[in-house]
Image (cartoon, rainbow, N blue to C red; front, side, top):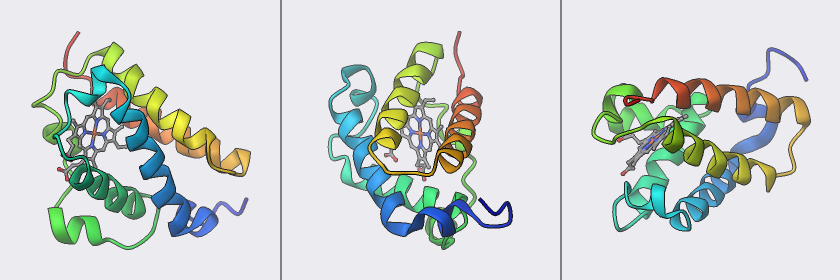
Amino acid sequence: MNPFQTVFELIGADQIKQLTSYFYEEVASNSALRKLYPEDLSGAEERLHLFLLQVFGGPQTYSEQRGHPRLRMRHLEWRIDATMRNHWLNAMFTALDKLQLDPNVKELMMEYFIKVANHMINHE
Ligand code: HEM
């Protein structure tokens, strides 16, 4: 793994799209998570998809459409405690497990998700 290559270059746009789609399959089947999300999941799926493309080094379309991510602020409307964080991370890790990824890239992505998910906690 070349440290100067981005996750986007290493895994490609298709796998980031696939990851988002698997993640939302998990959201749909997890009642604790599901009730936080809008009835129609397609808009939420597209927002996360564009965000992940951007954050992993791909096109910056997310910020063109949504502005600065300010993720913690955007998540304040939901009560996110450690249990909810675990639901989210489990959904994302299940999605990651479905992709065929180089273990080093996968670890990097998991570390990123853990860090940001911890940062989203806004309730004991
Ligand atoms: C820790 C538990 C988390 C919970 C319970 C949670 C829940 C939610 C919910 C309910 C939404 C609204 C869906 C929509 O309509 O867009 C949302 C949006 C979003 N979440 Fe999370 N989230 C969590 C962690 C994360 C993490 C770790 C990331 C990134 C790595 C993330 C990235 C996003 C993005 C990019 C959006 C769309 C923001 C926008 O442009 O409006 N979330 N999240």
